[in-house]
Length: 126
Image (cartoon, rainbow, N blue to C red; front, side):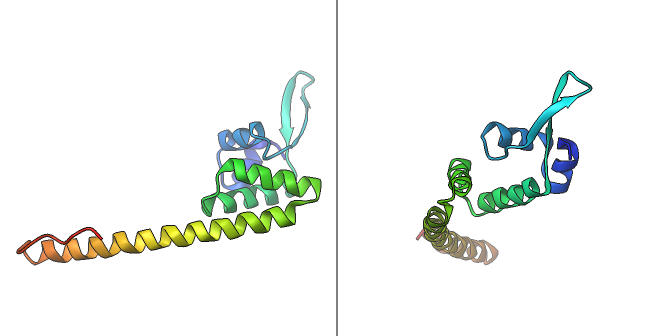
């Protein structure tokens, strides 16, 4: 499939697909359409890889780390690297979760303070 259909099926914009290709995350076959214009041809396997890239991003992983994991997968030594990266990402998400809970608690206290007429000292950041 060509880039427009691939992007549509993958839920991304064609510019995003081109970026992933430039970064080496996706390696579609290339050919010529009409004899002169290069085009990218994607497969169902590329769609699955795109899903993995998007999943990594939704977990907060930078594209550079995702690229490293893809390279490891292609070379056959990816499982150990993937496990290490996922364990590290899990710890990062736990840390961020704790920060978010702290911020949410502060917001709840601040909202309650404002809704009660902002009487007394404002809630402290903690």
